[in-house]
Image (tube, rainbow, N blue to C red; front, side, top):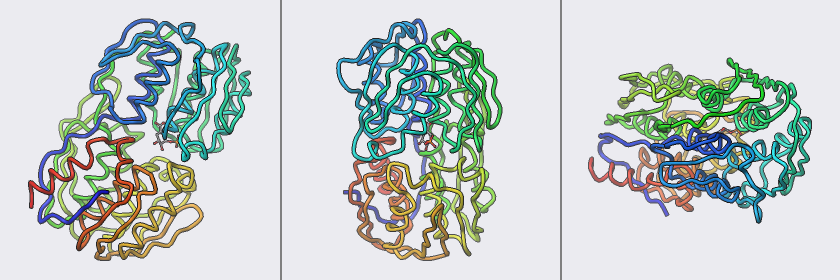
Length: 419
Ligand code: S3P
């Protein structure tokens, strides 16, 4: 169980965990390439370990800091089901990878992952010529033909899955998204020599041989979000987060915090391979304004919405999220789970079908709350505990290891340092 109390101050430097999305892609794309790549600062998170274990089962050689692909033909028939654990990214991206190979594979996961929608990858992969069943997800791959896809939901996982199929298909594959999503796959494929063109909300890829790519993974901005919100709400906070990935397709959070009135600085903006990074500095704010998130912004902020609900409790007025129905099919139904946790702590949260409305400011009170097995809900409630009166106990706290294994240790260190 995670126990959190409000520290007198929140001050110091936090080493961010490596970006989870980029880590998955560094493994999966290099598994399709021919040759060895060095991987620095790869995420040790459980989800990324699930990807690594599945790739090993497919015959890919990888070890501490390296991976050796033998081209698409180097992937071989797995001897049993591929266990994706809690990781939607692993399951959906591997479905696209496998669709292009003459193999048969079953992809399984934990109870949460087994209940998440997989037709969204199955249907377009079938249109490219693969045989795909869902519940459980079973892929019988083979020769694919390129296709034009207009996706009904904005999902970087679905887009990436189709790009992994497209790179192995005959002819071009085009994906149109209803709202732009993270473009890490596109950037990495371009750096590996793929025949690819992309912009906000669209991407086109042709059959390509991939060169191995050394990757140094930047800090995870979705993990930084927890500390940024904690600092924004704490009256005496000053945190420094070096080396955060600030890819524009992920950085809507920074603009939203600016707009709310949080004192946030992006320093030493530079590149880390194909990805932009910066050092972030944030200070506690006063007179912060409520926010409205809807339309395309909801897709851009999808992983940050649980912790933005915590932020909303400290803002003067009504903050509103709409067009975020995808929250209901994440690791938990995040509209329900974050609402339950925050209401138990005294917040006024009104759930809606596709979002929520939160009245602030309220002084949160410590309570016993549940992560519902969802890493981002656990960490968002921990942030609520950092600004609440009294003690907050988070049941099911260990699930943070899915994306951020050192989270509780860092939180404890930060609180003990600053009293
Ligand atoms: C991810 C895409 C998003 C996000 C998830 C990671 C990725 O999921 O929520 O945490 O790495 O591509 P969707 O594609 O389902 O929106």
